[in-house]
Length: 288
Image (cartoon, rainbow, N blue to C red; front, side, top):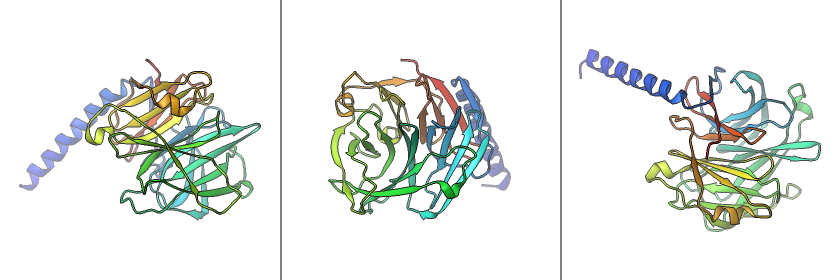
């Protein structure tokens, strides 16, 4: 292929992507670009409990723990870097409030080659915008699957049971695992397989890339490359019982390799984020 043919092909592809993204952004109730240069591969996203109107995000696969606090329109408010914590593959983030404190749970749960004997969860006392990083405590716990290694990118912490749930990525019926969270000992905890999900889609489009639970624990979102699935929890129902029902597919903004999702604090909508040099931060109201 001559060089000018190659250039023409590149320009045409760029135009198609630009048009595609312009149409996709119309689906969102609000859409903004994340312009901070370090944020290029958003994998985890959760709404802050201690910083009103703000969101926590992190990149995929970072070996050093970096958390970014963004405004709802994608502007960086602060970057937190924890140099002492180097891990394998960060994939998702969850938040759980206990009394006047709230905690961030960062899932080092990625395993593309299925080789890890255990995965790691970091727990961080959620900082306020003005807190010193020296005053922030970080704990960790190792978890092991009961049926061999799994690649996973989706995690949530149930505010009702206080259990952590991890959803595997690649199975035709993604596996749901549960674990108690004990950060006082050094033993590796074994998770329990508690459910399998029936999600529509075929092939890669069915792979699970993110999950979140509403702050009141009564709604759950699971994201795949093709859809966003929504469950409503009945009073007194466990997540295992809820997951046994078919979810509802909800409309959302299409994104190239979208791997992040998080409820708004009022539970009426959710945020998603994409990858790229200036990733999109999109807000969608829940419409069932």
